[in-house]
Image (cartoon, rainbow, N blue to C red; front, side):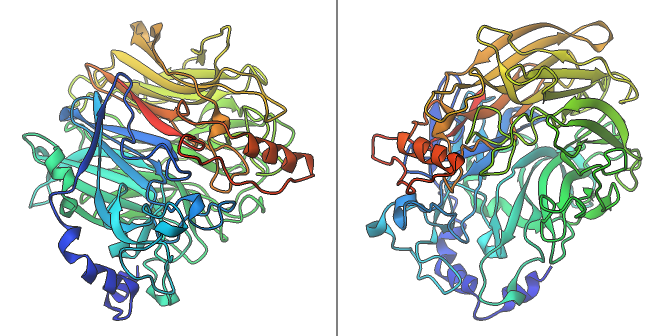
Length: 616
């Protein structure tokens, strides 16, 4: 890192920003947005319009094992970006320097959510040309439409020379004591991993790290008596400075990270924190060059996230031959620990296509020494990617129709382990893997679940759990959560209820579904019941920032206690379709593009308003 040099640069833009906001940055009186409902909205601070401030997607959730009433969620959140109508309304870019890692808290087991308001670099007041007056003067390296002000995303990034970039991943673990020993008696620590880029700087040598995107970890502590509380999270001074965890080079693009803290006190490595991620090298040219290196990598911290070691799990090179160690690349990982301290990393080893659909593989890596070393990859599942059509404009697999939302990682493993945290005593250590599979063919995609009761040595035959209709649930993304004692399994998934659409004029339906099963004899989930189905929405109302296609992100997520399950999903019930955008998207695919339109943004229109909703 170059952070010491970065902070010492007397002419740095952040020197001015820090001085201009010293009084307000660490105020404990930050306001909190609040709302309560049946399947409550998580991103309660975001407006219904304009685009793209109303855009949230790709959620994650975590529960504090020692304080089961405390939940934390994260999402890609555009709340602090300038509105599309601030400049050229047909371009809708990200605002340089403005972060997008939203954070939300529930202190009543998910019944309601709060979204803190912190101070940071923002353009949220820039909702039209006349309103774009930053609260601090801009510099040549920053946007003329942004400055220090209210944010709904992770704090402390601009002051560390960073920009939070989404891809949220969250985990709770024990807090280390003054002697470095971990104990729940010290309190709990929340870890929030996300991608981050360098804050725009006038000079290259002022960057906080090398490369395009790094894995960065934020942390905040709650006391043993209560865990995190609204007063603690409202004061951004309680957040520790973000730490660049990944080892970076000038050509590195870290991506798709997941985080976990060993939270069972029975483990000899109790408190150890793990991160898995795909590290795209060669300036992220992997998509254009099948031989570009993209190794799956593990990060480990033994001191509560202050320092990190790195371990590359597979060779850096990739190959069209999916039988080698890397295949076409391994991504979409999950990391967990059992009650004995064994760490598991799962990922999808992708096969190269066409022809479509590609047949890929779930692989597993294990560490029995606290992340010092890892086993070679072991095959877990043969999977079929639900990719039957690659959209010619965005070059990504889509499932609901042309100009649809990408589903690149839908078949990747989402895994949970019943380690009976916080004590680990009597844990079953059953492992459950859930994913969306294309083996049934287009318009017949499955939500599959498989389990292992022997540390991943053998796995059950996958079982489909989606509703077969009519209408049929066409699984989009799925995630499981086992109760710590191993008696209950919850699975959340997004599903399309309409078939693949060859036009953009026909309506489409997306819903969020949560199902529950009881773990029976031998570990088998039995008695599947649907415990929540969200109101429907039309995913055409979601959008990439460039407007060329829908966008819903790459994940849904779940967590569980011994008394309830919690889940978050992508939701478009409040997103309005924009016929002008539909027509333009169709024209791009037809090769006769219309003039790029202004997205529908009247006060009564909520185009782009994708949200995160939760259960319970």
